[in-house]
Image 1 (cartoon, protein in one colour):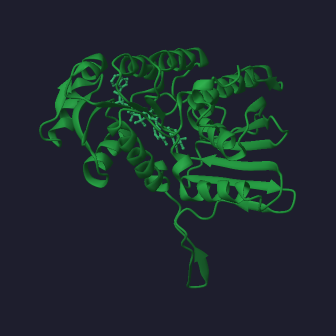
Image 2: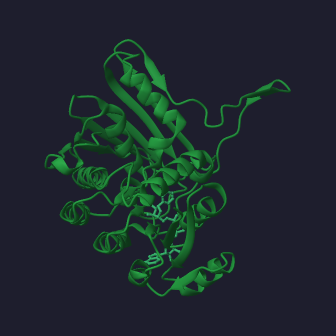
Length: 340
Ligand code: NAD
Ligand code: ISE
């Protein structure tokens, strides 16, 4: 079956996902799009023969020719579109964050449970990245003994254009490390603290860049995340786990090191599209396969909820300057078959 996909929000990642469904992956076709910027949606549709441009997300969701929904609009609008898709019984892939408040994520979790079947996949694509899956295998095979510490860096050349603040450095950027730490270590974050180092002169007003985010896992493993969104030199994602008997770390993104003219060097990815291109391909292929069967796979609503609940606690910790405990109910049995 070819899944007929409708895309809500055709900005940077929306267009990149349209490209991969249209040119790279199998089993999907884009039949409808919408964007609050109608003129922009019309321009994007010019390159997509036969695609319908809807005025609003709800019209696209109720279009009977649309089998499954891809939500790639701004974070605060995700809840409305994901709830509409669940209500229509259609599989939905939602870019991270699932929603920008834990209360909104909870409403999505409750709606999915009430519907009785998994319909939502959240865009935590790092779980499909070869480097991170190799890290997970090393931990699962007990190659470095019990993990004790995890050191991460999340550096982007410049912040995204959609109104980035210190809070969004956590809820939109560090949310990836929050998810990947939960997934790699197989446990929840129980407390957070934020440190604010010397501020870069490149940071816009309202942005405390860089930040150090500290996550305390249930077993006591401590995760530190440097988030630096004006890093200028490129997109650099790092992770190293320190265990009782060894360490394991992500390698170079492109695996290439050149020695030439008395120098050594390699390429640094420009942005997330380059660094995680194959992971995006794999996550969306997984989603199309599940959507063809009327369901969803991969990171669940519960993962989306947990990541946002932790990010929200980090923002509280930033305000108070103190270690702050995460308050989260236990994972509902509905999601128990897909443990961390
Ligand atoms: P963008 O600003 O380039 O695109 C967003 C588009 O959504 C814009 O065209 C905007 O007009 C449209 N839009 C906003 N609200 C809408 C609504 N209610 N209905 C229809 N259209 C609406 O932003 P982007 O970089 O493409 O990011 C979009 C989302 O994807 C964000 O949630 C972001 O966090 C996420 N994202 C994820 C990754 C990743 O690595 N997984 C990378 C980039 C962006
Ligand atoms: C962006 O929205 C992403 O999700 C990227 O993966 C992340 O690295 C970047 O910091 C975010 O702004």
